[in-house]
Image: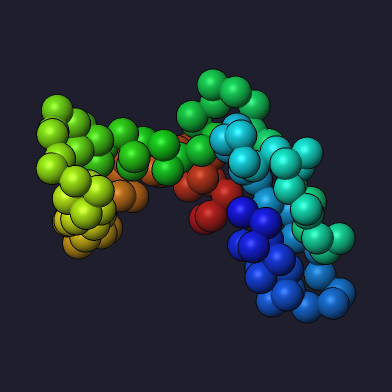
Length: 109
């Protein structure tokens, strides 16, 4: 995450400050990171899936492709995840229906 933040910060123009909204993953906390001066991190409150729409996509992937499976090795896990992701991204309307909360639609229209 530190490498990502550093690389991302380097793409931001000098007169721009970025606010990133992150979920509560342990490696997303400011105490665990070296946050560049042109980035501010804001953590989502716990148990707020409506503020993190991609959680519904992850749930869909688990329910339709990745649950109740036994994988022979690490590469099989990676292959299954890639296959699930590629199937999901072939159906943008499904992704939109999973991730589109009313407040997002109101803000984007």
